[in-house]
Image (cartoon, rainbow, N blue to C red; front, side, top):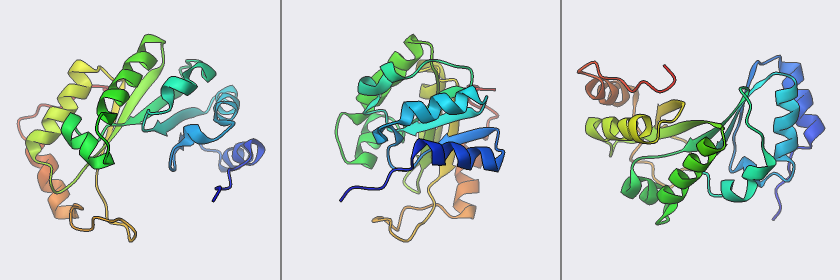
Length: 184
């Protein structure tokens, strides 16, 4: 079954109507949209900050369609280090592909942010290790982190963090005052 894709004009009109200065293009894999580069280009022309969320698997095929801009960043999902990330997406080797795509984006002058979700299975040390890797080794421009939140259709309902668990995880991860500095 083919999903309906929002036409370029409709996407741009919705952003214009909202008046938002920043746009996060998410939902499945936006790089699958046949005109995603046109949407991004039109938003950049309007000086909207655009964060294109991706798992990075299609980036090698699509990267030539984009131009670096201070108004544009790829937001790559990195859900843990290699073993944890590959496990979370149920496919071996995906972490390495995402890291290679991040490095290629950086080499070409693109801004790269990451989006990482933490679950009940993550320890404070996992949080520290992932953020240290993203900051110190990958040297991404910014990092977004969030607790996994429950939603009705999720196949795994038992590993979502509640408010108390979230506060405890991040409190312990940042207890010594060390914070990742990307984007700071």
